Amino acid sequence: MFLLIITLIPLGLGLLYSLLYSVGLAGIGNGFTLKYWQQILSDRHIYFSLFFSFYIAVLSIISIIMISLFLALTLNKKLSKGFFSYVIHVPLAIPAIVGGFLNFQLFSSSGWFSRILLATNLISSNTQFPEIVNDDFGIAIILTHVLLAIPFFTIYFLKLYEAENIESYKLIASTLGAKKNQIDFQVIIPMLLKSSFPILLLYLLFIFGSYEIPLILGSQSSEMISILTERKLQRFNLDDVPGGYVITIVYFLITSSIVYQSIQFKNKIEHA
Image (tube, rainbow, N blue to C red; front, side, top):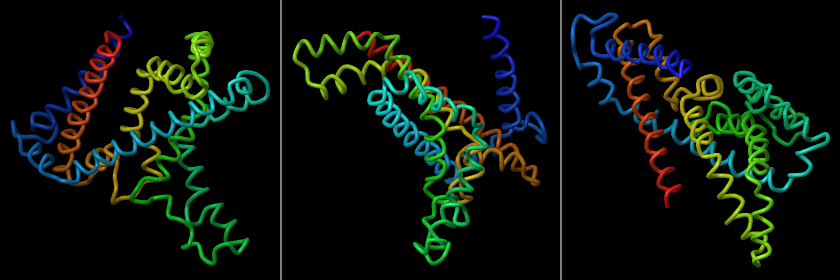
C-alpha cells in the first residue's frame, strides 16, 4: 500500500500541473483559458499521431505474441535447459536505446546490410536498399520492439506453461481425442493468453508511449505521440508548451480508458 501511495502522489501532482498548465493557470499562462485545448483538439496531426502510435503498438504486440508462442511451443525443451536456455536471456540485457541504434546501423540505407549487398553487387546503389529506417510505416520501430520483446515473452510463456500445469490439460485433451492443432489452438494458446493478458496489455501501452526507439528510427512525417509531445514541450516558442501538456492529459485519459475497459473485459471473460 505504501509503495502504491508513493507512486500515485508524484503521478497525481504531475498530472495536476499538466492540467493547470494546459488551461493557463501555471507556467506562462495569464489566467484560465481553453484556447490551448481548442488548438490541439482541432489539429489533425495529433489524431494521426495517436493512430500511428496505436498502429505501431498493436502490430508489434501481435507479432510478439505470435512469434513468442511459436518458439515457446515448438522449442519448449531446448529453451528450458542447455545452451539455448542461456542464449535467449542475452537480448534482455539490451536497453531500448541500444537496440534502436543497433538496428539503425543494420537496416539504414548506409548500414551494414546495405553495404554487404552493395559489396556483393546484389544492388548497384544504396538507394536501392529497402527503406526501413525513418520510413512512414514505422517498419524499423516495429522490428526493434519485436526483437527486443521476443526473448522476454518466450521465457514468460514457458514459465506460464509450467505454472499453469498445461501439460496435464494437454494430456486430458489428447485422451479425449483432440488432435494436436486442436490442443494448441483451443487449449494451450487460450490458457496462455488469458493468464498473460495483464502483462501483454501493459507492454502494449509501453510501446504506445515509447520514446527512444521512435526517436532514433522514426520519421518526422509520422510521429508517435511521445515524440510529438516532447517536440511541443521543447520548442523555443513558449506558446507551444501548453499544447504539449494538453497532449499529456489526452494521452493519460486514453491509456486509462484502455486499462479500465480491458479490466472490465477480462472480468466478463472470467465470469462467463
